[in-house]
Length: 111
Image 1: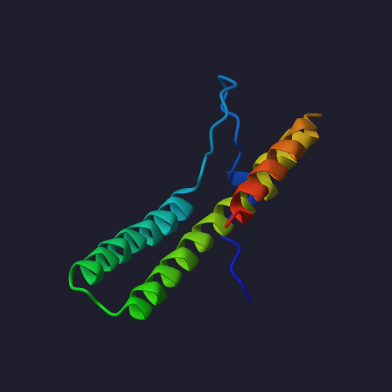
Image 2: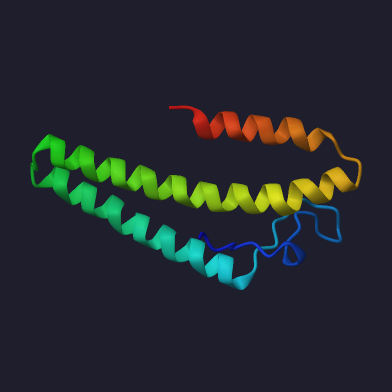
């Protein structure tokens, strides 16, 4: 079973100064940073493959793996955003957040 990385009570997207800001737990930040560091290494690896004239199919396979890893980061962020930020804003009567989420999902789905 998938571990819930977003405890609902720890997160919100509006700071006391009313500026939108995500408040990730330290565990979530560490998870995302680790994933992004790994992705950064994958990108450097892809660059090296291209510089070494590696067979195109092998490079494309590595690009696909990197895109999948980035999608994983997006899924974690979207899950937390929906479970916390969006719920909080809806509870405050801010229904504009629905349009914002739809635009965000459209951006994620573009290829």
